[in-house]
Image: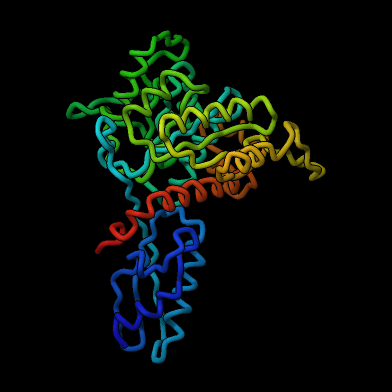
Length: 354
């Protein structure tokens, strides 16, 4: 028995999203043999891999079937890397993927989705940052329970941290009761500050909560940063879907990949009688995504606990981690991570280098 024998056995285990075996993808590392005991590491492309447990089981079974193997130890780890920028779109140093969370209109729960997406990725083990780019109505400080002011060190702004996520928001820099009345060039400058002048360190994902619509902030961000993709949030009713389609068209014109659509406030389950109510209709975002040839990333139910958690500054993933709402956000995070891994599949062999 040799490392080559182990690798050959593991070639039957395929990544279901990348459609290649783990050996070809360079994900198998540090193979060790001690008598009948075999150990190795599987380096996934994201810590939020939705099939992580299944891949581990398949690896164990494939190696255990070899003659002479008495025990198998599989260590699951991950390395997330993105592609660099081109021309004026310089990559943010240390950041693998920059993901915009957007909507065509306000009131669809975009900030709620962005906050819980960031927290869910962090809980999966990823290094995550969150930019509140809604300069006129920054909600992230309240929803993440952070009200301090950041400070500078060595010419860089140090982001604040809550629930395992690094955060930057205009809400940290201005009085919460003072309106921000800025024109386009000033918005361009603050996006530059938030992406280039903040010490983000090393991040797997930088989530950007955009303002609603298709305005200056979206354009400035797309011009400055190589966005890995956009997540489009809509509620099921037609007016929200029509505006979401405009946001999708904007990103497509800006050559930003659209990772998919999320249906927020998709349905309500009565806690006293378990009856399901589709307050804003249901399934519209899935139908719109399918019609436009886009992935549908998931449906988030409407529930008072989500609103209460956001108002209290402790996201529902923290206050009620076992709730259906929290599980829906975790499923969304895994889908987004999977889409990013598929998109970066051309870089995968380099990811797992020893």
